[in-house]
Length: 220
Image 1 (spheres, rainbow, N blue to C red):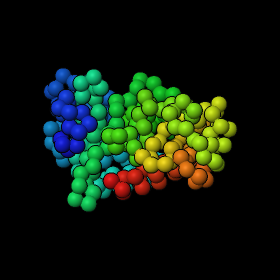
Image 2: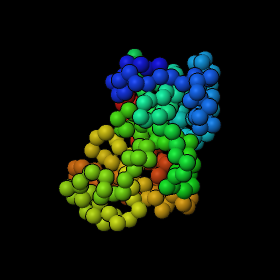
Image 3: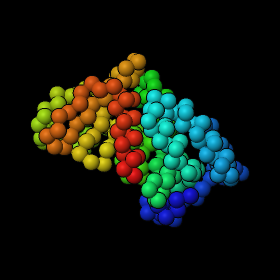
């Protein structure tokens, strides 16, 4: 367990959920195997989950399977259960997290299926990956103000559409999903920038965020 990293985010108000713990029986079915006391067993189960959950994100899946050294579920006061994957990179350990999935998702299709198993998957600052549902907000209500063209023009054009924030790069780029498009077989992404970089419109959702997540993970 990457305890020091966890303490920076949550203080000491967390503990690892292990089989037999009261909370272990309340975990989502797919997460229950990660409450095993044996790390090797947890990693084996996690790799099986990665194959399923990240089947539309092959670069991310391969990187996670190569670098993940531990996985577990922790309980945090006032937050609940969180799945944590620790990755070893360049002599350091970096952790990604997912919150417990909601009973229902605002998305359909493959995006909805992802969020039924993982409620986002990013670092502990909600950067470098898909954000949890609580942080998914409509374009124009997401606290990001695009003052610079051409992103300002594209944001204005799409502010009454179904685009909602779903990816925070941690830098100048923010990623959106067309919620309506998730209910067919072609979910679409939109990338806007806080500088004058050219926006990326109507991008293929999974290819876009697979590449961006992979890039973020390589950076740590």
